[in-house]
Image (cartoon, rainbow, N blue to C red; front, side):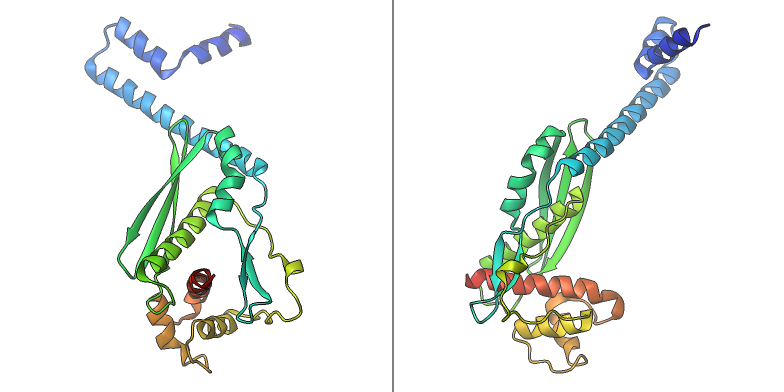
Length: 245
């Protein structure tokens, strides 16, 4: 048999063709069930592979997300940091998402202390993947209770969606920052102390941070928790800054 004939034969031997052949030959119910399970498995694997390929294509087409929202220092003149709000992210990714057959949805859990947002990204062939981001609701922020929840929810959705799609935002717009900008902390310990002070906590030493860190983040002040503590405290600072603007 020629190579071309072999290739044609392999192409025709799909699970559905095997099922049709089995039916025509009077195959037993057990055999048909096995073939239907095979067909289902093949479809699942094809959908997973299509998702992976489409995600890679999306990431190659997706621009680096531009940070457009400025959060000011307490002096009201200098920029503390710049970030990309979720509406700006959605605006910048909607075309490559659509072009590559993706859609997304969010599910949210809220227990008054923590907000958990899960972004589910689904490809048109059916395969989907999720990413979850959890953030505490600041109990002592300078906003009303609904504002605190809404701010935390927006923050959690933004990070969950970016993580699910594997996209990143550009560097801070340092051109918009003058010499009055506060120096950037060099390590996580320094960041935690500074973030706590920005949240109105009176802490002068790292040991004094334990109670405040647990109250605000529900995390123990341990080395392996430092990155997550910094993320959650920064989110609380952002909530306050957004509420004051």
